[in-house]
Structures are given as C-alpha cells and as structure tokens.
Image 1 (cartoon, helix red, strand yellow):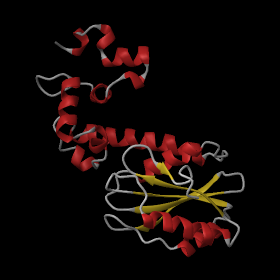
Image 2 (tube, rainbow, N blue to C red):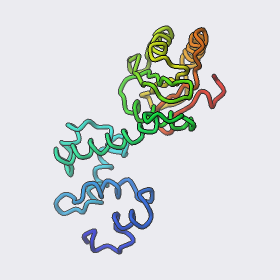
Image 3 (cartoon, rainbow, N blue to C red):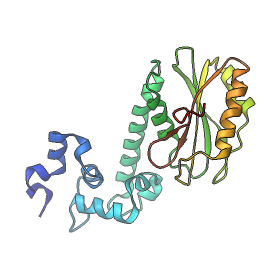
Image 4 (cartoon, one colour):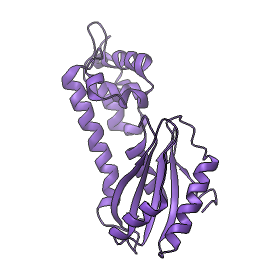
Length: 224
C-alpha cells in the first residue's frame, strides 16, 4: 500500500500538519525529506532501512555528504539537499547567539556548543567570548586533540579574550567516546582557566561537555 493510500492520520505529512514535527518518528521525518522510496518500497520503509543499516539518526546525519551520496535511497542530489538542510538548522540555532541579544538562557549556549562540536572524531576545545551584557562576540576553536584529549593553554584563552575585548567566556569541548562525565583533567583545566581569567577581571561562566545526550554543564554541577 502506498503512503497516499494510508489513513490520513497516519501519513507523515498530514500528521506533521495536524500535530507538529515533534510528533513524527525519525523514520517519518526522513521519509518526508526523501519524498519517495526505493523500488518496491515506500519512503517510510526506505527511511527505516536507512536507519536500521546506518543509524541511529544522529550517526546517519553525521556522515559527510560524500558518504551519504553512496547510500541506497539517497544519492548525490538528496545527499546535498540533506547536508544543506542540516546546515540551515545549524545556522538557525546559531542565530540566537549571533544576533547581538543578551544570553539569558544558559541552555542556549549548551545547544550552541552541541551543534558546533558533536560528531567530531577528536576532542575540540572551543570558547564563546561575551561582552559585559553577555552578548556573543565570537566563537573560536582553540585547541584540537587526539581521540580522547586536547591540551588546553589558559594563557591562550586569556589572550584571545583580551583581543576580543570580552568580559566573560563560556568554554566547551566534546567527548568522542559519548560519555559526558567530566574527567579529573576536565575539572582541573576548568579551575586553571577560572583562575587565569580572574587575574585580568574576566569571568568563566560555564564549561560544557558535549557527548551523547544533552550537554553537561560544570556550572550546574557546582564546579565553577
């Protein structure tokens, strides 16, 4: 049975219009993007196959466009459209921090670090520089590490903060292992950064760890 022959309440497009995109499964969302499936399969069945063989969804979407293009059901044209759609989503999330508004919601910074750092194969340590009203000035990836570590130099963070005339910073790094729990080294680096920044009257507002699930905030843990 083709999707258009399904009961209206079960069709992905109709369900989205009636209940919102959040009501759809990963396969249904992907099916709307695909529009049609492989020969002998509808779009939902094709999406389920893609997720079963190359998922879950995050793993599938983390693939580079050239890898997506080789998957049955996608191909070069759909792979490019999917990569473009993901980038649009990333830029939408970034807009909250880039349009000059005061950062009132700490979770917004965590989401920003997540979309910038999740899926990286090695550790990346990044810094978000803020002005006196906690508006974003710049975002920089300062240190890149191996599979499980990145050497962080507090003096370089201070130097870049002064260059941006920042009043505060939020830092973050990813854990490619998927485990968000901070290591002893993570906590030690946080303490050293806070101390170094305080010497020049700069505040360290938070340190996010990006892994599987929501980002972990060291400030929320009481470690800042």
